[in-house]
Amino acid sequence: MLRRTGCLFACAALSGSLGCTERSRADAGPAAPAPAARAADAPAPSGLEAARRLALAAPAGASPIDREIEALSRRLERAPGGADLWSALGHAWIRKARASGDPSLYNRAGACAELALALAGDDRASLDLRGLVLLHDGRFAEARDAAEQVLARDEGDALALGTLSDAALELGLFEVAARAAQRMVDQRPGLPSYARAAHLRWLQGDAATAKRIIRLAIDAGDPREPEALAWTLSQAAAMLWHEGDNEAADRVFARALAAQGEYPPALAGRARVALARGAWGRAVELLERAHRQSPDAAIAWLLGDARTAAGDHAGAAEAYARAVDAGRRSDRRTLALYYATKGLERDEALRLAAAERGLRADIYTEDTHAWALYRAGKLAEARAASDRALSLGTRDARLLYHAGAIRIALGDLEAGERLVRTALDLNPRFDMTGAAEAEQLLARRKGRPGSAR
Image 1 (spheres, one colour):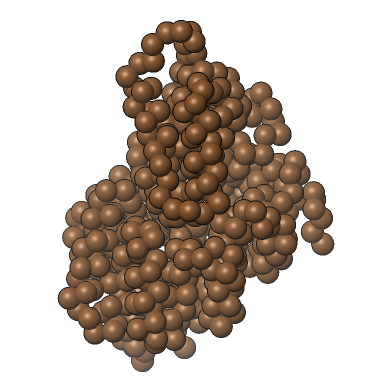
Image 2 (cartoon, helix red, strand yellow; image 1 turned 45 degrees about the vertical axis):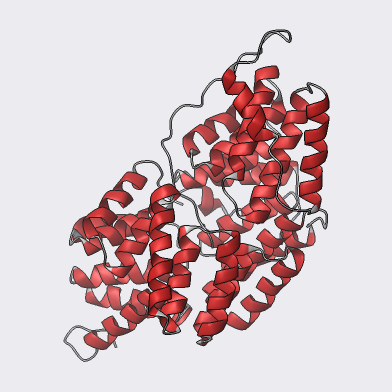
């Protein structure tokens, strides 16, 4: 039985080799030192002036978070303000970015962190803010280092523990991520800690426990933080979708939209359910709404698939072009997976996947690399990467299908067919291209010597 502060991770989780919506990105290195504080009467360097203009930019909208940003900005425009006010504004921009799905707003939070740390280089809230900005910018090693800098001073800082857990997971350091999440649960049981614990258990293939824990997260949600609740509900719905339970998933995605209207992950989730049901027009409508809010590569790719299914081939081509453009700008992993899934630009897919693998080593990056290697005919390397992608026991049909197809190509027919069948049994419509390929692969194998029965 789970206790509010008891151990949420089985011993196996921390003793061996231990993401629906995702991130990719930039170079990672040691965390930059906090800017030195400057004298109050010294002129601000031009870099800080530019940061101030960015931090105080007007938000577009009239939501409670927009009003909070405007109120903090007015205070800072009237008086110089200390690190605490700049940090508060930065955290407000983080919440705005999450709610809107607009990644450019993290730059405004980063500007706030720069200004706060220029005033007080050891301010803990500002250091926590910098860690969050680094995390959302895909600078995972730097985010980990920033979190550890805070935790060296206060081992119970919940925000730093969350950043450490998230960054470590992206870097493929599952044991570090699990320990940080457990410490977070012990220090501050609530939605952020329970949601992380649930996700980590799901990655380990323990969906039953993951769903029990994520219910705790939902129950701990604060109505004053609707985006956090919508995100958690979307994660819970994704667990159901991964099991092929489309009816239940759709209900929970709808709850997420009730908590946070037009929330892109929930709109995209409902679109996946619509695609699984063959409701092409409904899927297109939901994804067009999601893409208006969050024009990222994954949503544009899904929109292209939905328009293809609906017979709008010109519209699909436009959406796929947007996916490529967004991927080139900010999401190499999704672009590599898109190319590999569609059998396009095989050399470029491999180059992108290998570059991303050089920066982080989570199971979804390993899977993307494995699939790009498979398309490029590098089967032995693909098998090694696929084995790493399956190392946690994650019950994700896409990962299982990729692993099965790679094994079949290498002649391991029985194990390969078993994995492909498991993928389709788990979630028959996990991806329009992948699921169709999986069915075709089994159809070709049927009746041949050595095929599974």
